[in-house]
Image 1: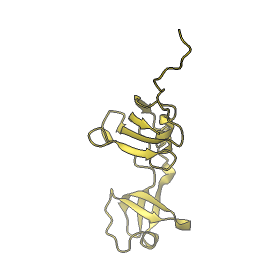
Image 2: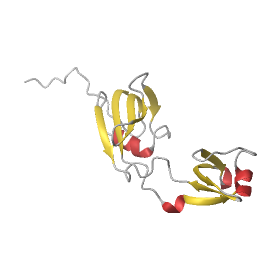
Image 3: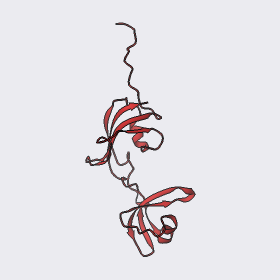
Image 4: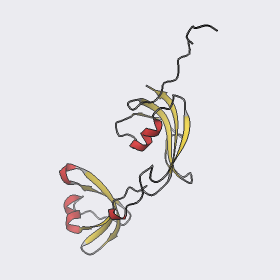
Length: 156
């Protein structure tokens, strides 16, 4: 055996600031696709920029270029368990003041609000009442186990 280094470079490994080209798929636990790039063009993204949820980025750290892997995520590992305290009533006055004026919201619609200090947040409209509306401010995928499949095409 010779001590001459191999001329084949080792595959690049994902770190927390990598620039990636990849195919990915996020699906429900039963395999129903929520989003996938496998049928079209791959995605390009830089980790740490909020382009993927942090819990998905963490699954990519340490994977080598060319890896193709599927992760099973519990609800807690994904978007968290549903929090009943995040189902709240909002007065129609507050709704009008902090969302699109004179909007004709429908039950089941995701409504965006202005938050204090210039932020934004969203809630699913559950019920319209005479003077208020009932919203669910949980993430729409809270309480659900998910599958995350990834195929790393390139890692820079």
